[in-house]
Amino acid sequence: MQYLWRRIGALLVTLIIACTITFAVFYIIPGDPALLMVGTEADPDVLVSLRRELGLDEPWHVQYWQWLKGIATGDLGNSIRLQRPVVELILERLPVTLGLAVLAMILTVLIGVPAGAYAAAHRGGVADYLTIFISQIGLAIPHFLLGILLLLLFSVRWQILPPGGFVPWSINPWQALLSLFLPALALASHRIALVTRITRATMLDALNKDYIRTGLSKGLPKQVIIYKHALKNSLIPVVTVASMHFAGLLAGSIVAEEVFALPGLGRLLLQAIGYRDLPLVQGVALFVALAVVLTSFGTDVLYLALDPRIRYE
Image (cartoon, rainbow, N blue to C red):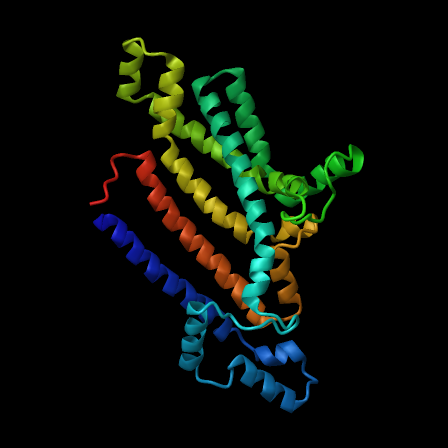
């Protein structure tokens, strides 16, 4: 139990550091944010009013304290361009990006783990070499290029899946899933290849352990030993990589959302940067940073279910 409390304490410290870095990056960027937003030809009174609205006329420590208070109360300010609360805009776009990330991670696990385990169980065979070859291709092809190829095949030529856009989950969950399938597959391609190779490597190491050879010598079914015991003990490195890549999916969905015209957080961030909407850029960046930190904490907790050697005292 003490270990769990230590992890929670580390989580809180990391959250504070993430908030501080997010604030510091935007504070030390050269130039006047207010001037960037309204342009160099803006009226001086407008500039003064905007600086006051953003709190830029206060000392840095006052700005930082107000920033932390806003985070604690769920107030990240208002978007300059859209004149709406930043939190409201993030929550409005979150179902698209979260659905995309979850679906991409499901595809990664459902394809990558079985493929890697099967290749390891048939080391040196045709399936093993074919898996290595396909995973190498998956690592080499950029996901935006694969996304365009998938669009040309499944949407333009075969007309099986929608070419872009998003149907809200509340209106038609099935259509929403179909809208996200191609971008999720494109986004997951590199991660599927990586998880496949890591699963294969860790499985090969586990299959050489003494307890595996002992089980085989006692006549236990080979499939049970491979897929129940060896695979389970090989999943910790896979979970680590997969969890970190899930956070990366949330942060790296900008290109996929642009290619498939998905109204998610990545596209919102790109538009905010283009319009120099500082509060919105800062809010989305902070949300992504917090998602990465919380995902890392969830991974530490998940280790307990996979490795009984980890004890919470």
